[in-house]
Structure formats: structure tokens, C-alpha cells
Amino acid sequence: MSEIDLDRLLIHYRENPYEDFVVETPNTGWVRFMADDGMKVEGPKGTWQHIPGTLLYVLERERNRIPVHAHINGTISDLQVDLNGKFVEANTYLMSVRHPMTKDEVIDKILKQVLVTFNAPERAKYFFPPEITYKLEKKKRGTVLVRPGEEIIIMSLMKRDTPLIYNGEPGIIHTVYFQPNITVNQGEPLLGICPPGKLNYIRKIVQKIQNEWA
Amino acid sequence: MGIDSVYPREHPREERLLRLLEGCREAEVLTRRPKWGDEAGVIMRRGADIGREFFCYPCLDRGMRQARELIETGEKKGSAFIAGGVVIAREMEKSRGRFDRPWYAPSGGAWLTLVLNPAFLPENRQFYSLILGVACCETIRHYGVEANIKWVNDVHFHGQKLAGILIQGYTSRTLGEEYLLLGIGVNVNNTSFPEYLRTMAISLREILGKELSLEDFIALLLTKIGWHIGLMAHFEQRYLEAFYEPVKPANPLIEQWKLYSDTPGRRVLYGTNVYDEPLFAATAVDIDHTGAIILQREEGITMREVSGEIIYLESGNDSFRMNTN
Image (cartoon, rainbow over all chains, first blue to last red; front, side, top):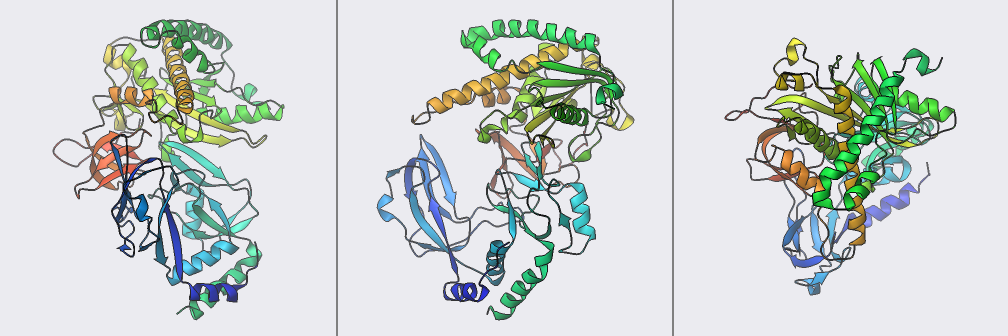
């Protein structure tokens, strides 16, 4: 776990309390924008994030229309208007969504730099095995220890359940980033693990941000 | 003490199954030839790993646990487990399904655990679930029973469950090899079900009114699994060859699944663990090219789910019947 220059990070986030999310095409196709530069957009809503966000653009390939919605709330910036109505390759940059960060998101972002994150290997749903669920329910937050070789999460995709083995250094489950009924994209963090000796350091970081972030 | 001394194996049964499997494969190629031509033989060979070795036991507690033991025992001796090996038990005493649900596995049923190395491209690994559903359904239909698939891979006959599938990934402790354990249970000749399953599960013997050769059934089932695994590998190759082409080949597995499934158009209850925590009711519209289910909710929202499970709702109301075997 790395030490961070917290003061410098806080100044940085205060000056620029935004995160820019890049929007690129998932595959080739004809692109038609449904949003304008500077427009405010909403991310998905609902209990299972099942209500799609604002429609950003439509990508059409072989009469197959793929509507692409915003994944997060924010403001459209840097819209590539010259691409409207054009045929584009996969991974073509179309626009950014400038998302204003909340205090909790700033805490999360900074903690991700100091915690060891355990990321989703595939786009799937994830849930804890019964013994970890039991420990998380019964023990105090920040006291459930995981060791290398332990099965800590079950990845579920099309009824194929794969126990994921923790291979990092022993640590405490500090943050759970996923919800059991919501699909997690590949590479997104599932858990933030903190080495036991660093727990106080993490708590100080959270406290400092809570106190100093307006 | 080695596990072979704890659970005695049935070697004559293993030899018989190997012989039957060979015959079934030859017959399968002949059956598929009108549609696939000379490629039928190539496809079948690609799935010929299935059933390379059998480990038959009169009784086990759990097939998955036994498969893991065999993997670890083999690896401790310095060799990885042979992909395509099959653990078969005449009966299982402590069998479990997903979310630790009990699975009733008395003598007379086909209780198998197939061990594979995940050979498909990572984005195609979800298709193992569909392959098993299609292969089970095809095998059952071979005996003249019009079974259907409920998404993802539950095989039923007029709502009564005939077959269930459990797939688990496993990383070996000894060598760190990646395996897929495919647990398959089919109610073939078993006719006694506990009271709570009486109306929910059914066996082929009950439907057909006669006993089937369990060995023949297992050999045919493994042949069908091998065929569809071979077909998927064949599709992957064609897909990669056409990677830069504007038109990509369609996945034949999806077409086959749709042929046997009665899910599209049904009112369903959906949930990650639907029996314990149902989330919402919806209409199952279709599955997409990845096998994900498309659900249409009353609010006009369309959802695409890559995971979870469904229960069919009775027509006219939103009640459901528990059905775990």
C-alpha cells in the first residue's frame, strides 16, 4: 500500500472537483448524436440501475441500432460534432461527460489510491460466499480479515459460478464496491483491501477529507 | 489414504462407457452430415476430449467435491487432470445445487461431473451453460420426450424438471490450473422423489413408462456435449477468420437454444437467487447473441441480464412454484 500526499490531492480536487468520463464507440457503425455540447445528462437510475441514463448517441451497424446512454450524471463536453452522421471505427472518441464529484466520491477516489483493489475479472454479477457474508454481517465494519488463498467472492455469469481466490497480501475488507444484484463491468473494483496495520492511516484520511471538504 | 481407497471405482462400467461413447460419436457424425457435410467429422473431433476418462463410483457424497479431490491428487503426483474426465456416481448423498440448494440424487439418475479446462475465448465462456442445456435437451428429445429449456439451462417437461446443471470454476490449489466443473443431473430411471419435489420433478422413466439404459443415455449425453463444444470451437475459428469482415457468422448455438426453449414470450420472475430473493416480474422477450436474457418490464423498460435465474409465472397471476430438482 502506497503512502500519498493527501494535502496535494485535496488541493487538486478542490481546484478541479470533476472527473471526465470518455465516451468512445464500442464497435464500428454510423453514429448519430442525440445530445449537444454543454447539455446536462443523467446516469442510470432505479433499484437495479435498470432505468437507462440520458441517450447520448445511436450507433447503427447492419440495421442494428445500438442506443448508447450516459453511465453517469454530468455535462457533455468536447462533442465531436463533425462525426455526426459519419461511419466510425471502434474506439472512436465521441465526447466526454464532465461529472461533478461529491465528497463521498472524492473519498472513494483517494482511497482507491491507498487501498489494494480487487477488480472484476469479467462483466458479471458478484456475491460473497456464505461464510464471508456471515462475517460481514456479524463483525464490525473494518474487521473482516482476508488471507491469500481464501475464496472471497463468487463471480456468477450465466449460472457459471466461479469462486475468486484472493492472492494479495493479508488485509481487512475496508470497502465493498459492488452490490449483489447489479452487474459489474470487467476491471471495475469489487473490494478495497487494507493491510491491518494501515487501518488507522486510512481512517485519518477519511476524517481529514470529511473535515476539510466543503 | 488416497481417495480411490475411500470410494471404490467401477472399472468395468468405465470400460463399457468408453466403448459406447465411440459408437455414439460415429452415429452423431452420420446424423449431422446432411447439414454440416465433411465438417461434421472435424466438429466432432474438436469435442472428442469429452469422456476421455471415466471415474465411476457406486456412491459419492458430492460429485463436485470428488472432482476437486481427483484434480488435487493428480496434481500432487505431478500431472494436471485430463480435460474431459467425467466423474459418475450411481447415487449421491449430499448433493447440492446453486446457493447450496439440496439436489436429490438417488440411484437411477445420471449424475455426472465433467472436468474441463476452459478452452473458449474469455468472452465466450458463458456459452458452456447454454451448451449443457442444449445437449441435455437434445439427448432427452432423442428418446421422444418433448422437453424444453428454461433460461439458462434448466430442462423441463411441461414445467416438471428433468435435468439441472451446476457449473463452477475451480483453480487448483496445487498447480494453480484453471478448471471448469460441470455438474449435470438428469432424472432418468429414478422414480422416487421426496414429497416436496413430487409435483415439480419428473423422470424419463415416468414419462416413457419404461426403464432406459443409463450407460447408453450417459454416452449419448456426452456425445451431444462434445458435439456442441466442438461446434462452438468451430464457430470461434470462423468468427476470428471473419474478424475484419463487415458480416460475422451467426452463433449456431443460439439458434439451437431458441429451437428448444419455451422461455421467449413467458411471464417470469427474475432474481440473482430467485427462489430466496425474487427481484421483479417481467416478460422474457428473447435472448441476445451473447445468451443474455432480454426482459421487458411493465414500466416500459427493457433489461438485459447476463446472470441470475428465472421462474415461470403461472398464466394469469404472478405466483410461482418452487422447483429445485
